[in-house]
Amino acid sequence: MLQYYVKATQTQSYILKRKTYLIILSNGGAVNAYCLKFAKRIWCSVEERCITLKSLMLIDSYRHKGMRKSLVRVVQEKGIKDQKVLAALEQVPRHFFFEKAFLEQAYQDKAFPIGEGQTISQPYTVAYQTELLQVQPSDKVLEIGTGSGYQCSILLQLTPQVYTIEYNEVLFHKARKQFQMMGLSPFTFLGDGSEGLPAHAPYHKILVTAGAPIIPKTLLRQLTIGGKLVIPVGDTGLQKMLRITRVAEEEFTKEEFDNFKFVPLLGNQGWK
Image 1: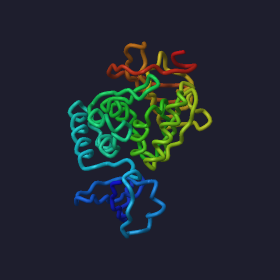
Image 2 (image 1 turned 180 degrees about the horizontal axis):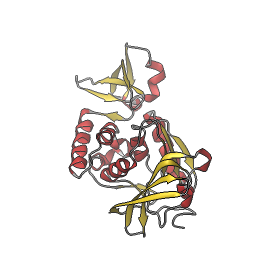
Image 3 (image 1 turned 120 degrees about the vertical axis):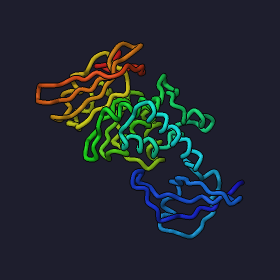
């Protein structure tokens, strides 16, 4: 079996909150990798250890990073200006959410099926919604529709307080496993996201990642004063991106933006 030599470094990744390890290939090349299964074993060590190829997980190579930089340029050219959002897009390895056979698709600006009739959103759409949300480092954010976990991972680059709820049980467990492998710690829940997550309200920001037939009043009530809800609303074929701001206890303002096509929001306040 092929083997790699792994040397722990003292480099700490602040944004992704995990140690990075230098993977030294037998041919002299090197890539960065996230070797979480072995993190406890070599956390404080700087000596070389030998592990098998089978044990390596979530490799983020220079090639992957280059592809990500190119993707960020594409998104920027389409009009995304927020540098924090662009930096978050560059930090999160989108290919971690894809099967290895689909590496090229991971860094195309396109949505892609993830099973259960759902998709991982187009990077431009992820950046667009995130930019509208105007997330601050101290914000408490609720995401409706965890899906693959990619959008949540982007939000976690902007604030550590991210709550995310998923309607589909298969995707819920898959996303939780993905977060664990990446060393990310959002607050994850399984349930009807169209009703929000009132037990943990209020939130400074709420992001809905599926198309809704209406603006759920339950979500509006879970916003802080000054809080914002970004949600696509329309029919099942096309939705208008809206931003709702709670300016007083019973007063809200509504802004309209571009049209998008999302998978339907399921639940009591969504499509039934």
